[in-house]
Amino acid sequence: MNYTRGLKDGLPIALGYMPVAFAYAIRAVSLGFPAWFPILISASNFTGTGQVAGTDLIAEGANMGLLFATMLIINIRYSLMSVSIAQKLEPNFPVWKRAIVSFGVTDENYAVAVRQPHKLTFPYLMGLMSCSFFGWLGGTALGAALSTLLGRLLEDATGAQFYSMIMDAFSISLYAMFIAIIVPPSRDDRHILLLLAATIALSCLFYFLPVLKDLPSGVNIIVCSIVCTVIVSLLFPRTEKDDAAEERAQDGGAQ
Image (cartoon, rainbow, N blue to C red; front, side):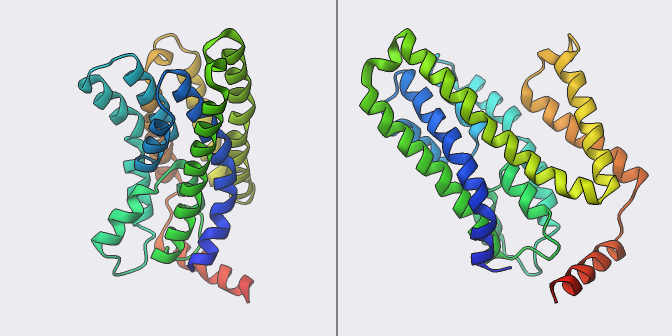
């Protein structure tokens, strides 16, 4: 579990992040922000949904209270992911390393890291998260540069249509990445398949039911994660012996 292995695992995530960050930068510039603004936001934050929502709120002149509450709701799910990753860290993982790693906790990084059969090392996590982060930052910089070249094009109807086309095309990459991460383990483990099916069913309720669909997107993610995980964990508890057996099996397969 070294740095090179982390870079290798993070490369597909970086490639998926780049077009989405590219579209985010174009969106920010189209709202009237200078080209350096989305680059600065991506350099100091690592949350796609949060950045888009926050940039829109700033453009609308929202106050700090609304901005803080929105960011909390959207990003609080990362606290759940951090708790889960903390259980897989190698022994004697100091606080300063945890603080560095916490910046790189995203949905995709978490999904890849939590699937690793071995304890997570600091070099591996740094490789995984730095690769995906620079993919996100690079995509933002590229989008900001292109927006500067396009100039006023984004201000008219043609520009709006161009941005919508980019968003529709590029957003597919993240969905494809999630499918590639989720499908293989669910095919091998019926418990993961059950968890996936339950989460999809509950997400559909939040999407279609009149009252639930009006809730902020961050709330439904948290509820679906907690409720479905608790139910599956209670029905099919996983013990430390199971983890040890799986790790031995992975070691045997590697040999």
